[in-house]
Image (cartoon, rainbow, N blue to C red; front, top):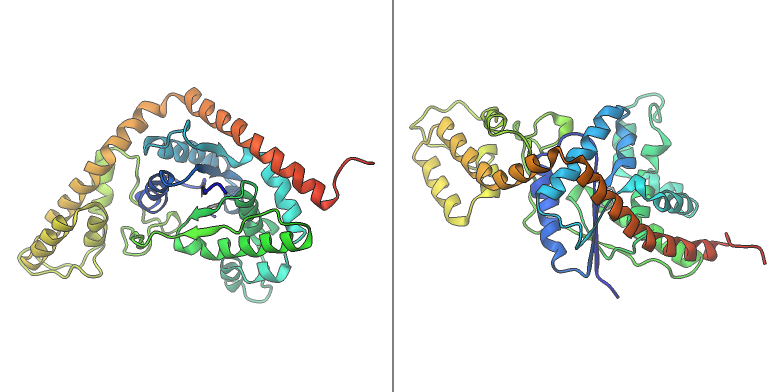
Length: 330
Ligand code: TRP
């Protein structure tokens, strides 16, 4: 059996260093150990939360560029847009028909949304939000991915995918592999400028593809306590320190710890953090700048990618249609 790795990023907002450290970089590194890798832009997931069409189009471009600028080689992997592969949506409906509503009721994302409502718990909840995990299962199962690198917040979705796959296999015939979530042991939560998890919805991101000036500014915005220079500082629970340790070597982290004990000023600490982040993202930024105006190249790569994956998708879907009784009349 082929070992296939697959992951997607929902195309809302600007790619930030949380996406880079938490998803893009580890997925590209893992791809070396797999027979085939599938990386895609989850644009049909994006319309669930965001009805701003300009935002989505802009985000698709920037997230595609973030993958390419970070070293994705579209010759060695399958790189595509979810919306270019209609077989995913077709499978999504088929899976909807074997998915228990009760399973979806237990989704953390759905429960978090209903928890905000008082008298009518389903106020403002769309079927898109409710069945989000089914679309995600279709993304994964259509290609029989064996391993899915995701952030810890997505583990439940992979478990649901396994449930749905098992249900289909039981009702019809064994068709789907049960995929495994791959959570990097070293993957800790990447903190944003306010100390919470870096996320577009908290407005606390440090962008990946900005100019040096904007990068410096976002780092300057990181909230710290007000201890003066010369006063020893505590590296635990400190966003500056925590971010620095995602970019620095063990020795550099030790040295930074010593500087905290010696009372480094916040200005100098942020200066060091900027240098570390900037060293890592400079080649990504340069590649991004060189690709930015070449929209033909991005479109060509995505269109080649979808052509390649659709061959696999069609074959799989044909066999699924046979299994469920959607076939030619005999
Ligand atoms: N739901 C994922 C997220 O928001 C994105 C995603 C969509 C995904 N489909 C996927 C991730 C399939 C892995 C596999 O982060």
